[in-house]
Length: 251
Image (cartoon, rainbow, N blue to C red):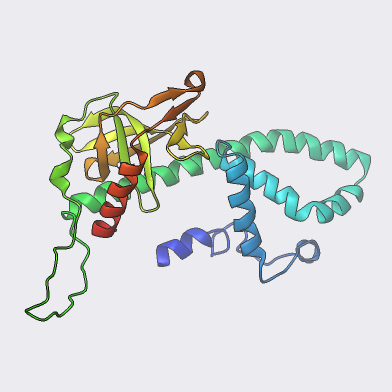
């Protein structure tokens, strides 16, 4: 919890870029509202659905202009012609630097997620999620609760270039194995389309490090659609059932 708060408020904590006292001019062009965060998350969700392959730098820039366009317009109109020229020169130079900075931050976050997944698995073996014990009479018939069986997937047989189905906390995702080292594989992931079971390769490669314990299945070959622009996993309903079983067992 503390780590999450530090990441969210790092710019406002001591040492952050906004940790100092705010000037009156900044306060005058700042819009205060209790629902600001809700608007920001809503804008980000909408923007990512509209442009799933765009970078976080792009989404951030769009939201900055969208939510502050009136204040920025008044601020820009109040400048002299010389100040405007200097501003655009500085923006062209600073924009490239900011884009590189945001891209490095995004890579660092993905790297931390992969390391946490690997470290979490290496510390202790995965355990079943505890179930509530329900007392029953001796005459009552009871069935065993269905659980995910790790031996169901022979992960030692995974090879490079094999398609795999990987379980995350929110959903399952398909991808192609790029490299394998013992219990760790690097997977190039696909992104989903509106139609169920249909995926495409993103413009920007999404390669993540995955522990084999999160793999639900492998070795399948998706069907090619629309001249190779889309790929259909015909067994997507079966993968969804496996994911729900895996999720109820471990997550």
